[in-house]
Image (cartoon, rainbow, N blue to C red; front, side, top):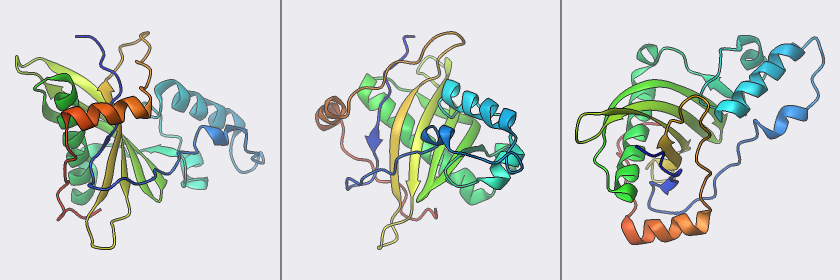
Length: 201
């Protein structure tokens, strides 16, 4: 199966301005040697750039000292709290639903492989998950989802920023489509999908 283009989708019923991830831009920020090991920081930044935030080792010293605005692995998914697990699974299902709508596929969510998180005004999740097509073939997907602070009425603020089949080793990811073209696709093919309003974020 050919790699599909990245597909942003707004899951909430209103459009919201997304917070910009600052993890890549902060590479040149100055750190004193006694705060963060320079080699660890460079290795961390390399992994973030090469994997676009999806495949990162556990750089515990960096995470402990920075925390906000960097991508951090969440570890064993099955050991996360129930609410966190439910949110990540729900976000993955939102992503695969939009992938199906845009590409005429019938993938069904199977399982979470792993998830990373960047703390912003809420959180950005970098989720790797599996889904199977109508013939039972399993593919690995990557999705980047903004899970924001709930609105004043308590409903979730969720936006799938993109979803794609994970590139294989040595194969570059498909370039991200421009927002105007994607808005036109969404207007023609889909309507916004409401998330479970009873889910806590």
